[in-house]
Image (cartoon, rainbow, N blue to C red):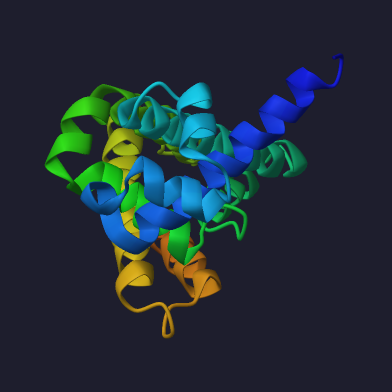
Length: 220
């Protein structure tokens, strides 16, 4: 009897993983309890025992993917040096980690974002998940800004705008990976994202040169 909770949890996880495969293959509307049961090699009765409805099943799939991504994010960020650029790169890499960045899981994430029924049901939860990570991006970009001699001025505003653009860029790469999986390379996407943020250095360098030139002109 003591083993039953563990067995039930393992079986539940297997059903969730089977559901992910089915959603990726046939989408929300094609995903049925019987189809998932067949994929998981369990009875419909057992499916109903673990999940009261299709909606509950999808809710658990969403929670599973969100928890999986959080684990990857935390692991990568905690392993990175405390320096802002290193932390930011770890965060960007987390979006493309092989444990979460697969064709199957991308298809399921996009199902949650694009299907009208799923989008309406999970809008608040999906927004909360996304906002959490964007806030972390903002924080590290803010740290990068204030490290520059002229970076403190409007650092928060710059961080918010750059993080929003970076997040949109990452979303675009996710879509590219889904549409063109054979041509897509995650490491190139990470490099492109970091190159975009590194434009901040160029921005501040030019700002500091202009400020120095103006000061020299005023002093003379």
